[in-house]
Image 1 (tube, rainbow, N blue to C red):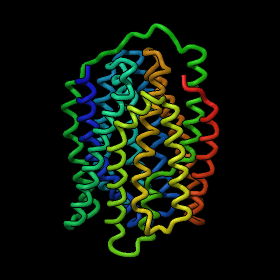
Image 2 (image 1 turned 135 degrees about the vertical axis):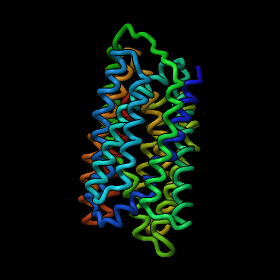
Image 3 (image 1 turned 135 degrees about the horizontal axis):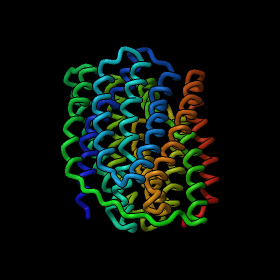
Image 4 (image 1 turned 90 degrees about the vertical axis):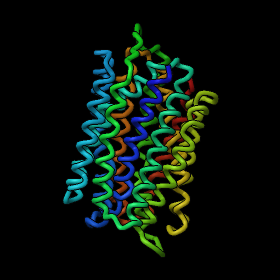
Length: 373
C-alpha cells in the first residue's frame, strides 16, 4: 500500500530540487529588479490565489471522476513549463505572472495528490504518510537550495541557476505514470460535528494564513542587515537552514499528529510562529540567520497537521473538494496578508513582523476553542 506514497515522495523530491533552486535566488532576482515591499508581497502571495482556486476545482473534479492521476500529471507538467518562463521574465510583474502559472500547476495536482495519499493508506496511517511525503519533498528542497548555493559560489548567474532548476523539473514526470489509482468509494457526507469542525478549521486556516509571512520577507530582512560577505549567499544559506529543518521535522510532525492529535500540532506551530515574529522584531537582523530553522519546523507541523486533520474529518467522496476548499481559504488569506505586509514593509520592515505576531495571536486564541474530534 506504500508504493504510491514513495512514488509521490520521489516526484516531490525531484520537483523540490527544481523549485527550491529557483526560490533560493528569487529574493536576489527581485532585488536586482529593484522590487519594493509591495512587489515582494505580490510575487510571494498573488500566485497562491491562482493555486488555491485551481486546488478547489481539481479536487472536486477528482472526487467526481474518481481519477486522480491525470490531474497530478497535468499539474506537474504545467509547473515545469512555467518555470522556464521565470528564467526569462524581465520584470517583477512578469515573474509574478510566471510564478502564477507554476502555482496553478501546483494547485491542479496537490488536492488529487493528497487525496490519493489518503485513498491509499488506512486513516490511522495518514499522518505517517503525509510525514513521509513531506520529508522527501523537503529533502529535495534542501538539495535544491544547496545546489543553488554551490552554483552561485562557483560563479553562475541568477538566471542560469533558475534555468538549471527548470530543466531538472522535467525528470519528475516519468514516475507519475507508475502510480496506481486506489479511490475508495464514499457513501456519505460529513457528520454534523465533523462538518462543524471542518468549518472551524477553515476559519483557523484563514486567520493563520493572514498572519503567515512569506519566506521572501524573512530572507530579505536577513539580506538587508547582512554586515559581511555576499547578501545573496547569506539569503541562500538561510533558505538552506529552513529546508533542513523542514525535512527533519516532517516525519516527527506526522507522528505527533497521529499520537497527540492534529490540533496540538497546529497549536505548537502557531506558538513557534509568534515566537519567530518576536525574534525578528527584537533581535538585530545580522543574528537571525539561524532562526530560519524555526520557520522550517513551523511549516512542517502546520502543513502536516492541517492535511491530516482534513483527512480525518472528510469522507472519501468529499476528500478532494475539502482539500481544495482548505487551499482556497489559505490562498485568499495569504494574498490579503501579503499585500498588508508589503505596505507595512515599505513603512518600516519591523511592522510586517508585528502584524504577523498580532494576527498569529488571534489565530491561536481561536484554535484553543476548537475541539480535536
